[in-house]
Length: 222
Image (cartoon, rainbow, N blue to C red; front, side):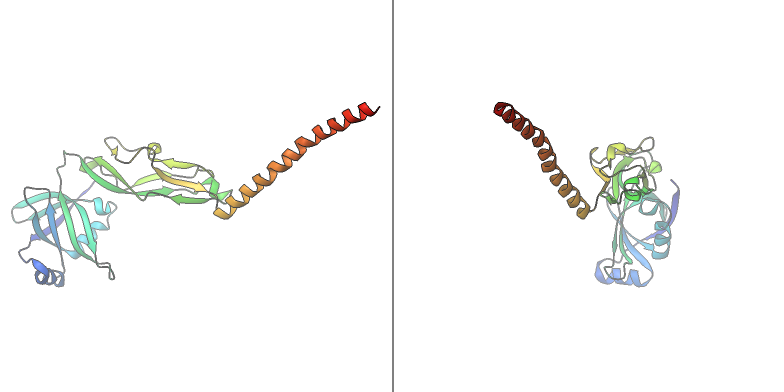
């Protein structure tokens, strides 16, 4: 994975008033975790947004420089304004390129299931992110799953997903990622059809027995 250069500044202004000044100046207040102590930082908001818009997104490897110090980090968490959706705070986590980290990667489904295209089923996605462990350089931009072969009643589980070398899944192997089911109305119709078919089959089975009984009675009469 590509490492992105992100120029940051160590901030002294803390508290609500200090944070407001930072945001008005076009910066995002941030904290770098992972070392012996956390370091308050400020990041140019445009540079941060540009880094997050790359293919790697939140999992981009960031090379931070401020003063004579240099750190490698990833985004741990982003806080956004509830209405404007702009980034108001960022938590960064220091990482080592030769040490595995635990991270969440977005999941993307590919293709149209045969059960949807040919039988009117509905594709349901149960997981949107997957937790995994790997070296920072091996973090995938996303995990893709081909669901085009799924029929009605089929599902994809974590154990079915193939990952790259050096990547460990941290989700339960039997966890469902996506499945194809019939709409509820269709399920009810199918159940009713089965229920109606059972008595019919029973009646058909009973008919020969009744005929046999009548045949015996007729023989006795003779």
